[in-house]
Length: 239
Image (cartoon, rainbow, N blue to C red; front, side, top):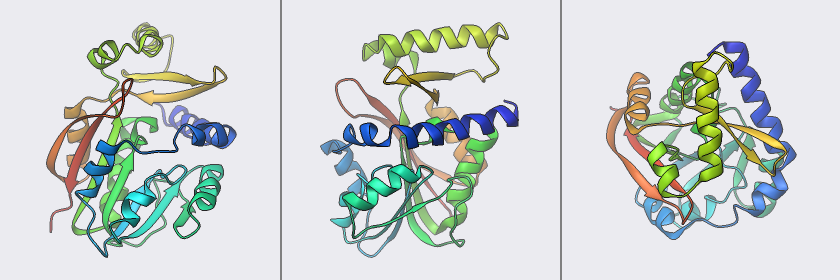
């Protein structure tokens, strides 16, 4: 993907979430129990935890209950403001996942839930993993989840509008009518906003993490409700 197009998509994503932050946050007022149990496995008392793309801060209670030192960052200033109101005792900041404002080796654990699928281009997705690698201590883990947007999952979950958008976009890309990469498409929000997404496979997630220097611990799928599912990967920064 052309860098200028990727930059425009990143800017559009930030503007979108600033615009509909309130209504979006209202749909993210809970964390499914299986996801809570999944994340609690990696949190240890006293760990410094970085939540990359924290949104309205909904993951903070998960890590607060484990007595960690939590910090949440998001590119949307409107969502960070909501997160601060929701959880006044937590540490939140506006920051770019591709250029994190932290020293090398500052964190024991990094988590990013439903963020990476908004990052356009292979180059920027590698940068996403490289920045997480940089700010983790040796031995630190990075837990990443993206929406499962594979064809078979969209069919199984009966995501017909999403599937239609995906197929239409792939046809335009193949015909040269849309300057995006294979797997890229837009999922609307409130019929007003076009939200960029990339459909991952588990092997692609693993390859991108390995390029950044991570070792793969495990990967898999995790349902998050009747209509949604996630792909996840747990990687470690080797000593």
